[in-house]
Length: 76
Image (cartoon, rainbow, N blue to C red; front, top):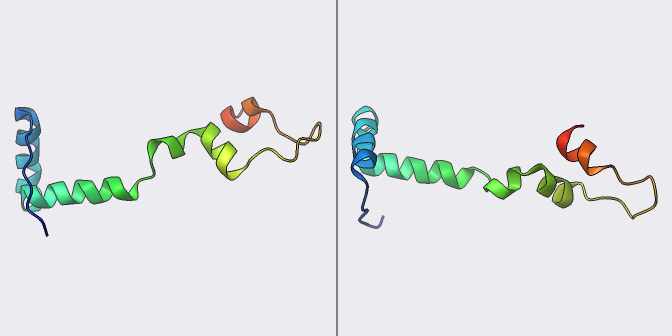
């Protein structure tokens, strides 16, 4: 492990202390928050248009093959 130092706003520190009281230590809470953030997909991956373009791109461009953006992205 590596030791590090953080500068926190007073209300951030108070929140961390409360969480640490329930879970163990401030360092443990910080590590848990970092791991949770690392497991979560980046915000841009949650965008329905990005999902459509990356994971379900329009087909080869023949008329009538590609779905409309409104229907595929917004369900409309």
